[in-house]
Image 1 (tube, one colour):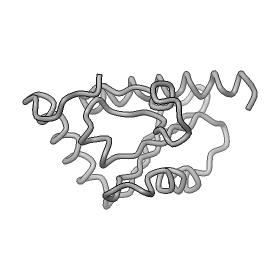
Image 2 (image 1 turned 45 degrees about the vertical axis):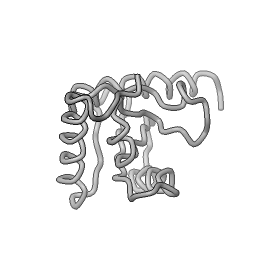
Image 3 (image 1 turned 90 degrees about the vertical axis):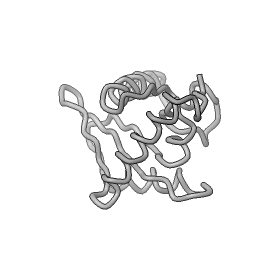
Amino acid sequence: MPINSRQKGSRAERQAAKLMEEVTGLRWRRGQQVKGTAESPDIECESPYVNKLIQVEVKHVQNLSIYAAHEQAIQDAEGSEVRKIPVVLCKKNNKPWLMCILPEDAAHFWHVIDAGIQSVASGEDKPLW
């Protein structure tokens, strides 16, 4: 992968983490940067509870197959103890971020986020950082 592509991907992951913080009220960070393995998520939440249940795939490309990106999020989540909710955050140059989630997963996504907020606030779920 060319260096510019890698830098673009890293920048997109940082932007996506910031966006998820604004949307969910929880802290997010780049996953692979911290863990350094290919199995690491693109971004991860401060809440271990949320990380167990949500898999986020970040894409910043001009020509995106949303179904392929969603499938990648599903495949990346395989091997988990429980089914993870696949989420795709995608962006084109000079366009806003889009969040793709299956309609049947939307309510569960927000339930997981709310439970993550409550567990971090109560000290029940020790933040990762």
